[in-house]
Length: 281
Image 1 (cartoon, one colour):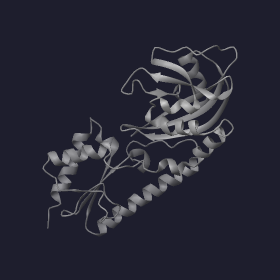
Image 2 (cartoon, helix red, strand yellow):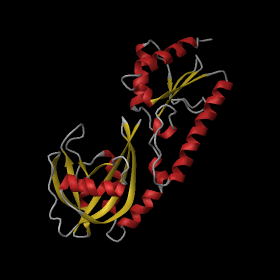
Image 3 (cartoon, rainbow, N blue to C red):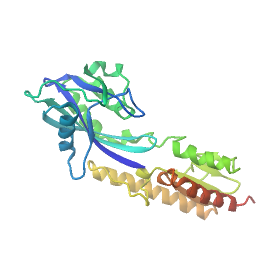
């Protein structure tokens, strides 16, 4: 699962945190959704420098008083988004922002009214925090949210993810129905289990489970927390597989990057062969 690193700026009008700039995306699958201005971090560039550059290129403005306050970690169906967010203000000589041809609309919005817009999914938690805090509490509350990363991790690995649905579809097409989902009776609660054949399939996200094939990156901030989080995930996965094998099960791990269009046929052919080889008793 690809990790996209971006930088976003929450521009406050005249230094007043009660009103911020929002832009409406004018391209791609999420056209029409609202977001905060920003863009991708270039190689060798800091998030701070990326924020300044992107706002200059996107809105033709210069900014001042840049303050780091929030990190977004969010799983879209096809990639993981890591986004560094900053409070900033327009430079006095900068003038009003100018909308680019990639934006449908742009407007100043009171924080209390942010929820009236339809936002990019990754921005929803950030919008809730901005809308629910007072001027004096805004940065303090958001800094706390950034460091309290465990809460943002809850629910990231949900049921019926796109990779899981792809695997299940291929299994059904191969004449292998009758599997159990998130089967609690087997170690590790496999995403897909064939109890009769003693086959357990784990469909792992590359970012969260540390794929050995695509070498996913580690967030630059709160590094100790992330490394500990990843280490626990890897150790838990290894224990589940070891326990399954001791019980005589075939444990199969499928990584999200192995389900891309150019690899899914090869990946699923091997998986289907393994399932079929595990004959029912």
